[in-house]
Length: 604
Image (cartoon, rainbow, N blue to C red; front, side, top):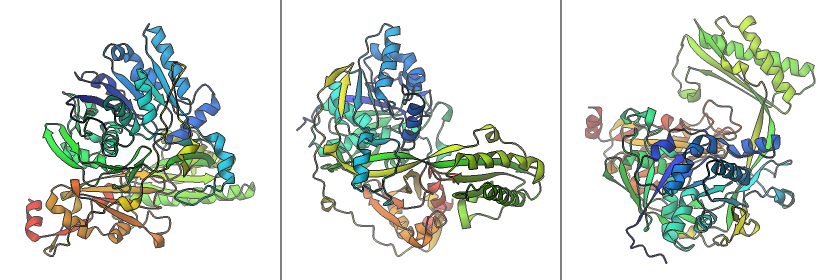
């Protein structure tokens, strides 16, 4: 086992949370006096389809080139001089191609930068075999797609650790679990072994907090008005210790906020069961994690527990799933919402008639939202009649020709439909957008082989951690006792912070009590049935609405998982919020029954 008595601290910064994250991160983080690693996460589940399309268009592509052009290219000399190492999954579908781009930039600067590549996640060659075996989607039960696009297993952190142990300055991966970009360096630095389950879980927690960039330092925080300096929001730095504990902070002089609330929100972001957060190297239990405000913009995180890993990797596949056209039409003036609805009906009727006349078949899906009228609130929307709205119409079809027809036809509304219709920039955008579906399943680790090469030289990689997890190992914490003194109601937002996020066709909402004594009242009021009713208009089938609730008493939190409510997932959902970022905002409007004295104190 690892010696955890060392006082050494490893400083790792989360420099990107998505493929479109800000260019302010690296120059800001380089001002920190102590920095050992930069981690760049680019690969949300929707991204692999994009990288696949890039590679199909140009076999030499398939990666995020602006990782070099914007994020690290201008700073390679300083990174090398300060021995700051880098881990990123910006390699997408072509990690070797991105690695060579970095080497070319380094040679031009006369820098000796060692670049390692982690591969093996791309298992497209197994697709025919998997289809023949009858592999089905792990959530929907759908059959294996044919044809398939990308097929990538989520690899773990040990190959990344091996690359750094071999001397890499920069490690480029394809699809790895996001937190592995941080856990890998920690395994290397502290010598954690595959059976150091608690420390691997703690390192995964550090990774989960850091890999979304400024989301842990005040970005998307419930108490947004309390967060200063969005223009220069500080990206996070984790001060990581050998025992697995981490202090989350940010560079001095930057905007943003590091508080128990900001860290707790990120801790539950895109998590289902917080007692069984499964990554390739370990199964993590977040439920007893403790958060301590250890100074200004400093939060200490400890208490994660770990269990043996599962025998499987998660696999994310993408496939072509038809075509879409989107109309965005500003409509201004008296009775704008009514004009928008009539215009949507007319355009859909007209285009449906044109499809029939051309024997193209009906729309696969149509979706209309009048933005500005609380369309995303369903039956809970207030009766509004604003004088300016944005009409959104989405049509899906198997044929590009059909959606292109609608894309052309919807522009005519400015001339022959509602008065006050104007032009939105989307009209100049492509009139036919390819849709990418996602297919998720599990595969035995023995069928996936991770490889590491360092500047063309093969690096030994330890076998993937074996299996051993049994759900019976979990001991569920008791729910708080139901209070009997609750006689008044207050909005949830006065009692809690909350954050939501999507995963496939489900989303989660983490709710964290602002004070421990609030939690029993929140738990008693927010039953799964009541939460399901709040999101009743989101479910694919309201009659089968399913909401799971999990307790995380260590940081006074609940986690709600809302199933089959994402309109097909982020790539396919036609909604205003396909990423479920606003679902917590909806729930924060629910009321919670509390004692009259507490309600009076919160009203002040």
